[in-house]
Image (cartoon, rainbow, N blue to C red; front, side, top):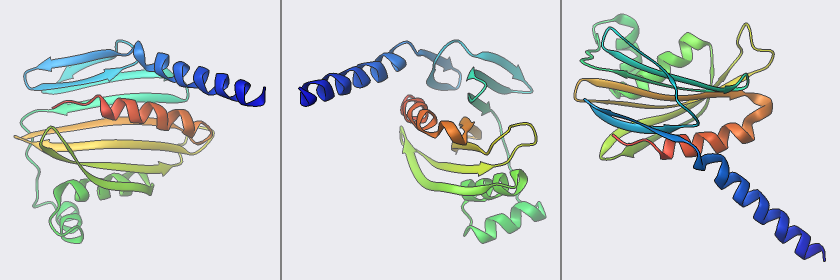
Amino acid sequence: MKKLLLSVLCILIYFNGKAQFSNWIVVNSSNPYYSFSLPASPVFHNDLDVDYYSYSVDTALALQVHVMNDVSIDTDSELFSEALRENSGDTLRAIAQLFLVLCNADLVSIADIETDNHAGLDVGFSYNDLIAPEKLYSFIRIFRFNNRFLTFTITGIESDLARLQSYRNFFFASINL
């Protein structure tokens, strides 16, 4: 009887997880091409050739996408030059290092990734926010190619890490470039 109840519970959890993501909508852009999925229609802005998408699931979980076109990075900047030197010339890791410094954050994870033949970086960090009552965690996928800079970010609170990781996995798996 215990095995039957455990099996039913596992099946319910599995299908509940599947249903949780089956309603997500696909956001597409044709120029430049990219797509990703979000739980519902995002807020969208385009300012100064930057596409910005934002969706808050609730007060504990938010997703954002920034797509910057025609980006050039000032490698003559002293701060950026130092970050490049410390990261053996790796631009994405230098940018991640500057994120950490600017947010006064702690590195949680970092890994080189590839999506649709585009090299990227997956970075996780934790930090304290002046408004949030507890530590925040952000996970970012960063890409830079063809003079474009793209970031896919999900942020949540420490007490909701399991849900944050679940959404993160689905969100990041939905990215197409």
